[in-house]
Image (cartoon, rainbow, N blue to C red; front, side, top):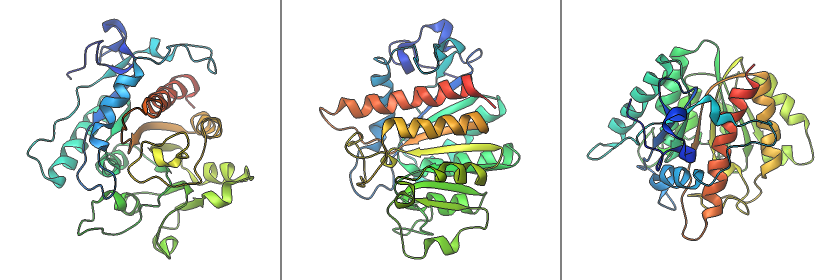
Amino acid sequence: MQTLPQSENFLGLEAGQSSFDSAQAVILPLPYEGTTTYMKGTANGPQAILQASQQVEFYDDELGSEPCTHGIATLSPLSFAGQNHEQALHKIGANAKNLMEASKYFVALGGEHSVTIPVVQHAVKHYDNLSVLQLDAHSDLRDSYEGSPLNHACVMARVNECCDFVSVGLRSGIMGEEKGVRPGAKLIYAREMVGNSDWQQAALDALSDNVYITFDLDFLDPSIMPALGTPEPGGFHWNETLAFLKRVFSEKNVVACDVVELCPMPHQAHADFLAAKLVYKLIGYKLSLTK
């Protein structure tokens, strides 16, 4: 598979640490935007994350190591020129399937949230007993939106058709949304999480052994993550987010992740950097805390 050179790849890694064959983690850039409904620009998210990552230190003081020494390969961004929405999602799914078949742990960089749909559809076929952990401000449970069942507002409705899931951090949705989810699904709203740590155990108990994480950056509070297509007040902060993710990686087998919906803004590089640091954490936790 074609990978990016040191000047363009995640963290600016030399060839010896960014070879696909030897890498224990892979970055899959998905610069796709086809159904966004408010602020535009999520197609620029992967490039912004990769660029910001070149300023991230290799050493992780929490883990006491440099996770990148395990190898992180950055694939060349997929091109979606001339493709409609369904064709783009099919292409994304095919590339994700290739990584699963190569037994690679990967983090996909969106792009809008609809990129999650084909990845999960392939993941449930590849991994036994898979569930999805969604960190998001929005429930994304609309069956169809603006005429499409594959809209970014329908992501978890499609996941609901595939496997059990746990959604945390919700603070925007549709009336009665919980009535249509499968019995093994769990919705945890932000209002239930404030000042109450019990939600973490409830989420972990509802997840299966194998977990796919989809992280919509609007899970975070706009005060630290303003570069969003659809920001929502009342989000979560850095340390509390990492504390939960660390528990997930410690207690479950996370098979892959995506980080989506970064909408880069001029003079807001701190948001791009936060996203890049988050991606490195998702890799570091996997390589250091694997169940």
